[in-house]
Length: 185
Image (cartoon, rainbow, N blue to C red; front, top):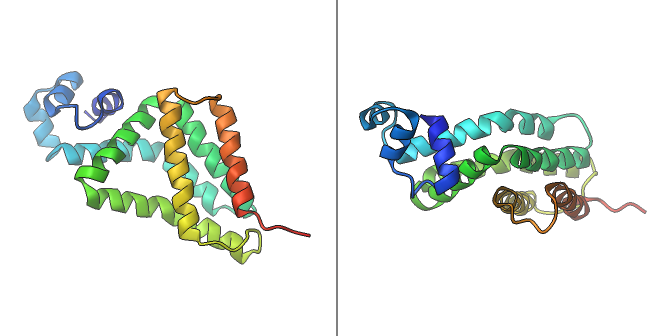
């Protein structure tokens, strides 16, 4: 059922996909849906967890590895946006779920955002402690980075980039490398 919802949410959005359509697309009755999920919000969360379980462990490992902070940041950005380019259905579904949660399931939305910031804040604090990154507010930089990544992912998913996905990825990497880099004389 989660795979069917992923496909339908990516194509039509969460709000415009009925539970009956998800069950029917999965080859089940509507009653089967309700024996697995309490409501659409619970199904949306299952779709989000399915998508993030594919890339999440890789991104977490990149953020907490022993490499210099600038290298981990570059690898994180490349890893996330490359995943988005290579997995458009999961990306589209995740974008749809985040949009749905931001309006109708704010507790899960807030939790998801805090979780996505946590590793980035840790990376930025580590980079500053190692004197590899300039002083800045780690929370705000995490917010700006996640906003940029999510907007870029949406453009990659929609096929509306003015450049190739690779050129966009390189540009985002360069922007945040310059934004966080400690200048040396």
